[in-house]
Length: 427
Ligand SMILES: CC(=O)N[C@H]1[C@@H](OP(=O)(O)OP(=O)(O)OC[C@H]2O[C@@H](n3ccc(=O)[nH]c3=O)[C@H](O)[C@@H]2O)O[C@H](CO)[C@@H](O)[C@@H]1O
Ligand SMILES: C=C(OP(=O)(O)O)C(=O)O
Image (cartoon, rainbow, N blue to C red; front, side):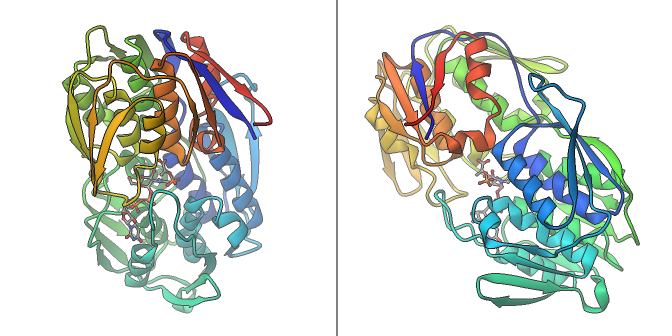
């Protein structure tokens, strides 16, 4: 198993290109299932999850082809052709490796009138049930049956009716699933308390480019007028705001200065505001963000919340950064019940963090020290990389397959801006 070795202490400086967003890619790819015409996605990141999702689409009968980009380029172009679905089933073996596989449920059901998808089960960061996906689909006309670890959904008469659903809590994935299903329904749908994450806006824009009729994009109420059929389109995946935020923390924790290119500062409002509050200099430019830190970092208080609140996917990286702040910070995780798995690993590197329920108090320390640590989930892994970049001596991060799910060529990007980081095989 691969490991990452970091010798910490280098200030990071230079330009760092940001890839297309994992969480947008994983909801744009299943849109291809909604039409018999090709969907071409540009700016797709090279990530294990994107490859995994490609395999799932192949399993359903869609072909995927990568065109025109050289291996050294960032941003791939993939054309997905789902002329005919040859299967309507997402099997356990694929779904267990990638929770986002549940996002084929809505589109396959809408296109084929039936779908059978394995229940994803829990994961390191929490339980992550799919009850809201199912309730929302039911509200727009799906009939559901659970058996042998699978959910089987059918649309009576072959087509969903459309309907109204108000989410009791905000769910990104459930909003995506119901929107993808509702665009091909017979009648209109109204989705209230919908997630407003930029990735949902990206999804809706792609669907509109394919001929869908959606009003209220970017708000908590989405009104969808179902259409008979969608057509193909070419669409560019939005920049990864979480990857960009992670590297912004890397600039901050190393006292460096990074220009993050191909990003949209508008999607990163709360992250950039939190960095500014922590004493980091942030300058938003047309297509990039300049992040630099020269003085000590200031302690801050943060609570995760659905967009436009502070993203849970940034919590672990901020925690690592705040280990170097001048005082005590307070972080509260409200989205996932078990998203502090990085705390004991950071403690091995000299961090002073106390967790009580959903709240963590992070007391800044004079120095972090390199140590062997183990990655437990995607963002937790990134927090260990960040701590390693600032630590004295060598940090070895194992189980880095988590990182490969969400950070495209991490070592290459960080080395190019001055980090001493390498990947070793066999660990
Ligand atoms: C591939 C992808 O885009 N993943 C993101 C997506 O995950 P995901 O779509 O799984 O997250 P949700 O927004 O659905 O989860 C929010 C909360 O709702 C709960 N819930 C969700 C669905 C459901 O049916 N029932 C239920 O109780 C979850 O357990 C969690 O406590 O949004 C999360 C919250 O911003 C991010 O951390 C993930 O990176
Ligand atoms: C939790 C995350 O992803 P996923 O929902 O794919 O597990 C994440 O991107 O931080």
